[in-house]
Structures are given as C-alpha cells and as structure tokens.
Image (cartoon, rainbow, N blue to C red; front, side):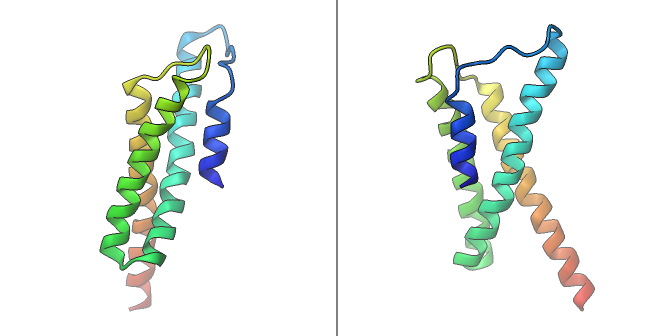
Length: 114
C-alpha cells in the first residue's frame, strides 16, 4: 500500500515549490528520504516475517533498492517529470536507513528481554 502511495505521488505532474531553490531541494529530497525510510521499515518487517531473519534482511534491502530505482524510472514516463541518480541515491539511502532503524529497535528489545 505504501509503495502504491509513493508511485501515485511520483506520477503526478511536477509541482512548483517555493521561490527558494535551497528550500525546494530540502523539501523534495526530504520527501524522497522519509517516504523510503518508511518503505524500508515496512519491507523489512514483511520480509523477516516471511523468511528467516538473514534472508529477510537481504530480500528487504534488494527489494527496497529495486523499488527505489523503479520509482525514478517511472518518473521518466510522466510529462514534466524526470529521473536522476541523486534521487535514486536518496531513495536507496532511505530504504537502508529504514531497515537499520527497525533492526536497531529489534536488537534493543532483544537485549532488554535478556
């Protein structure tokens, strides 16, 4: 469901942000990062529930990275939108960060229970 929301947002025509280029950059790249942090956490959770932990981790990372690249490619099909490598890197970084945060929380909760 989250993936569909990301793709719906990215298939809309490009909108005009503020008049400040720096602020626009922070808003757009922050959106890429935050949306993919959430995606990474959700994919990690689903993958580790489906497969054993180590396999689920790699499936989540690979799947999230494929989603990140596909997300940018889809934008090339939308008039007024374009894809770039920097956005892919923000997406992949967000996926990895989302997985890392959820994994850190899991490790902390395991350590507390012992």
